[in-house]
View (tube, rainbow, N blue to C red):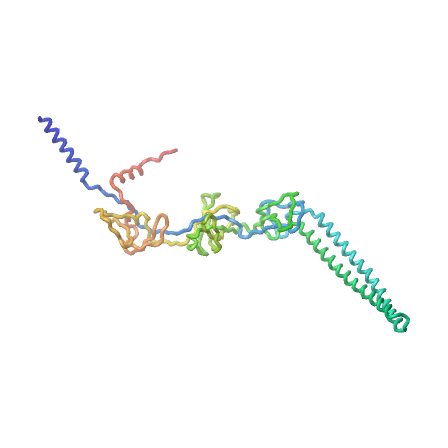
Amino acid sequence: MLKKIISILVLILIIIIFVLFLSRDKKIFYKTNKLTKCTISQTVEASGTINPVNTVSVGSTVSGLIKEIYVDFNSVVKKGQILAQIDPAIFEATVKQQHAAIINAKANLSKLQASAEYSRKTYNRYQNLYKRNFISKNDLDQAKSTYQADMAQIEAAKAQIVQAQAQYKTALTNLGYTKITAPVDGMIISREIDVGQPVAASFQAPELFTIAQDLKKMQIEVNVSEADIGKVENGQSVIYTLDGYPDSQFYGKVTQVRISPTTVSNVVTYSVIVEVENEDLKLKPGMTANVQIITKKVEDVLCVANGALKVNINPKNEIIKYENPGIWVLNNKIPKRIEVKLGISDDEKTQIITNKLKMGDNIIVGIMDEKSKKETVKKRKMPMRMF
């Protein structure tokens, strides 16, 4: 009987202890950060392709076989330098043919001039004879007609000479076009031909070379979505990275926001031109740049972590809606809510505007219970594992 009473008392004691454990208040711990000043930037992220500011396509206006190529990729060229030679044999023959046509036309003119001189003298002699009634009026008219016909043939011969000279000049020009020359100073970044390859310029000039005028000045053609294009303006600073240089950041400036849209799969984008310097020639045409266009930036302003704006301390578990944004400050272990005005923000922090706070105040950025705090401390003390 005594054992049963003792067992009942022990059971009652255990129940009382369990109830007291469940009913005790849980301790609350606050995670805080010191209020500091920082720089906050709002950016538009996009990608684009690096290209030279000025490129010139070099083509051919005549057709033929490529006989010689004097340059290759990355060759530095000067204006007027010969890049390639089209086989000139046919064009040289045409020049000789047209030159011979000029000589022939001039010889024909001399022949006609001699004939016209004879006709002129005959006509003058017939005029004197006609005045003396030695010949008929018909003979005089025939002599006049012959003379006028010879003069007309002289004018036609002169026109033939002009025509032959024009054709000769055209042949010389086409012969000159067989030498493909550089129109500007620069560097060869593309070569589309090989020795022995035919060039057909019947309908349009084929592209043989591409010359970049100045690789020290490059530009990025950035595709910005229609949702962000309203934030982008000329003169904004740009930070970009390249896959080829993962540990480096590069800088540029927006110089043009083009209003012509591009639509691909119902996605509308606009081209934004970013001017960049390339003094060390690290940037190569065609590289993909990951661009951040800085649309807004503030420096040396009060800021808090974005998590501080989401903290809601409410011991009574009541739902409270505040009209104005605010943050919680821990002062003498007592949390207090301070209303603030919000400025710009990025992915990590937000600018706050207030005269009720000062540098170094403890801003509550999170709430933890005792278990969470112990786990946090444990993680901090956990030694790093080497893999």
